[in-house]
Image (cartoon, rainbow, N blue to C red):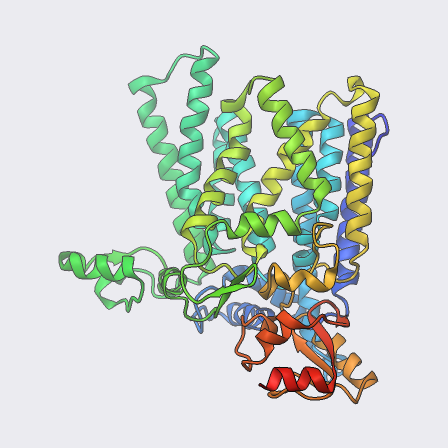
Length: 530
């Protein structure tokens, strides 16, 4: 976070642009040689389907937004097929779309922070967003986690602007962003609950300011706004899924989740009710719910040396955030909370900060205590942009802050930058300094927190340079052994001897942090064979 004097909004804007350009460049360079992660191929496949005017599902969670990632691939295959033919994983160029989108989200956060807290805060938000390692890691992937995080934040910001300036234009923009968010990830369906709650909170803020309530006279206007939001959502969702079997009667759906099967079976009189959304939209929502409850499709959940098949760990994402968010970022956020609530008396909370902390609290409760598919911090990224904007409030009134506070903030920014840079180009397995020995990160977390399939290329290089090494042998063997963190921790199926290996012996090296290297002697092999 720069310690410069930032009075000119124009200068702040260009500084933010520079920071976010760096964010996009780093995201591009860090993933340039990374192999496709476990999910990217299917996201790109569904995106290609959408471009081919087919939205039928082959799994539960792929969304039309992936067409943005598929588009560069489709264009390149059409224009330069001979250049891409035979090139290793040419689909990786689809990551360009996510990178550009991530940069645009960071710019919106800059405008949001600048509007609420001033130019210096806007630059601070851009800085933290630009170098946040978890955002950097997924900004360069052709998946939907950054789309979900970005659309959630942008939609909430647009909704606040609508409530502050209730005109047709702001209502249309807000409703359109809400609708578009539904094409990004099913997580965003939560906004249909969160936004009305925020509207009520905003009304509380107006009452506190002494604004007269609308009363019954405002009911027609409220009904018109609700109607507009619903209409735009239906139009956009249908268009995004290509109007695929829209108005299919409820009885013709095949449901798997507890909620949808209960509705279908408990209310047979609704069987002929035509559902005004595309079949694959509701089908996917049902399957996502089914997978979360049953655990089918995502395997073991791992935390602090323990695995569970179904149910997850209460507080999983709190623990993951503690270890995977830069400590400097956490300290600045904590300081911002203390300063706001203790020194400012939560002034203006219902008008502004509830739009940041309210949704963040909802997601924190849901993901940590009601959500079972705890397969990586990437699913929790929806809270990051909201917390970044709030954390930037520590730079409010920057010009009159004491020298000591400004130095501390600048030092925190430098600490974060050094910490994150030390992991370049491997941001997916980033852990902060609470895990001082990086070879021990597997003791805390696994799955897409460390090994998301991104290091297959690094593994190929290592094995070529170390032909004597054994890769994931089924039995203990003498010499160098290389094992994926996911298999070592039991997240993915593995031989029984991997677990005692991880408990008894120290790894001697790593391959892009996703694979651990062990040197087994005769005594080690005998001990592990018993």
